[in-house]
Amino acid sequence: MGEAKRRKEALGDKYGQEANILPWVPISKSQAEQFVKWTTTGAWWGIGLMIALWVTVRFIGPGLGWWEVQ
Image 1 (cartoon, rainbow, N blue to C red):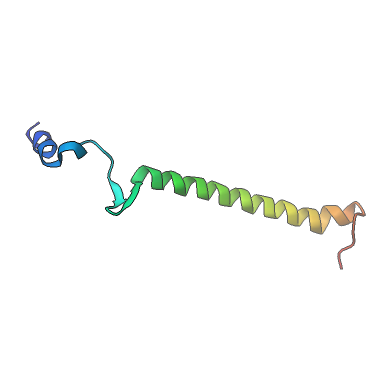
Image 2 (cartoon, rainbow, N blue to C red):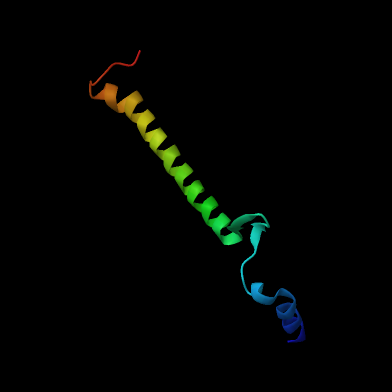
């Protein structure tokens, strides 16, 4: 337990708090990980919607006679 006490004395009020990515950026590491998770999920949703739109324009619309692909 000696190391933990020394660390607590050295850090003072910041002991047990999460560290920021950079000292001048007020974003913690867990917030950055959550941002990456959300943007990755959003990117996959966008890719899926783009594929669905392409299938609709290329195959479903012409198959139902809505328009002709030239």
